[in-house]
Image (tube, rainbow, N blue to C red; front, side, top):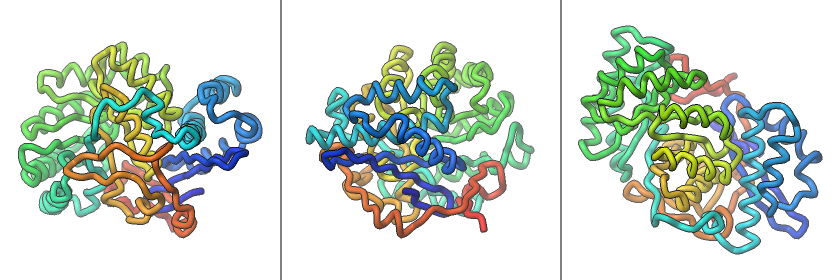
Length: 379
């Protein structure tokens, strides 16, 4: 099932057992929905039907290895959709929240930061007003990309504009709130380093994906150059396997990793990565741009993972019906989610809402002007 919005299509998968238990997985596959649906169609008869949902590890390993081709974003997304649904089934069968099956709670609440709030004109005045609304809702952290359509380098005018936007947001939210600066892999190392120094006076909580994801030594170059600023480097939403993270961790090129649970083979795979990262004193803050199921998965991971930092959340600043696609997800109160309650993910998915908002024809391009307004629907 695909729920459509102005800028994202959110794919839900329902897996049903012979005895009537159901489980849900969900993802936002940016500009790749058909690829994911095609992959799911191929693996259903080959691997899924007839499997035991409790044998999650066996199923994941078969999906990863037995098709022989190297697993990338599409494979790891389709795999995650099934893996997440299996955990939902297991939790419902045992009448337990998923996090209690993965080690139990290590915290009582989960810090959140807001994204998607800055769909306004790209001026200091508009960003200031929008940021004030975020903290008025109780958030203590907010993320944004102030760099327009920049790629590799910026003009002096664009650099000055980005600085003015960050300055306006810091003024709006005050000295206590976290400002998380998103770079979306836009820059070559020298530009990333230049912008990191220019924005340092506003005390950002991290710089996210300062360079494209394909060249990790370039990321290390940036991380080493800005380390004296005391601002962490965060990255990882476009790394999709444990093996891709090996070089990142060995280079010690990031302070915070951001795998997307729904593109990384599911919650157990991400839990393994978090444990590995902990050996390097690296924190985990999953990328989360989906709907209620992917957010619930992030909360369950946060509940049982010692080096969890913070969870991204879009849906307080998006179409209301995305939140209505499932009930049971905790609200953000004073900057925090409470832990999920109920078996599995603790959600009741409303398939009628999904059907009422069908898939849209979308091209979401972060390297075009006004992408931040998130009006990506094509005619």
